[in-house]
Length: 97
Image 1 (cartoon, one colour):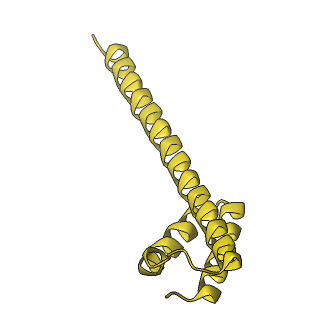
Image 2: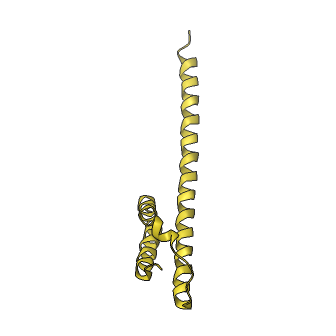
Image 3: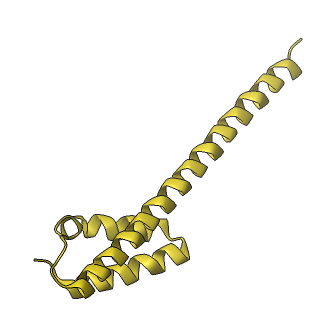
């Protein structure tokens, strides 16, 4: 069995990190609590299961945010690379004799 108070604390910390869009903090929280997260199982208590569901939704939101940020960074990296190639071609033509 896992520690319900830790689950509540982790949910609150993840929610705050999502609100702040603090990707580093989200990744750190998930990395530090990976073993704990993997031990979460449904319980007989409906109130406890509701807290577990809430954590799952928060965790999914955090993962979605990280994926979106990663995707945006890849797009920006591609654009930067594409621009540099274009600039290099232009420089080559500009200095040609």
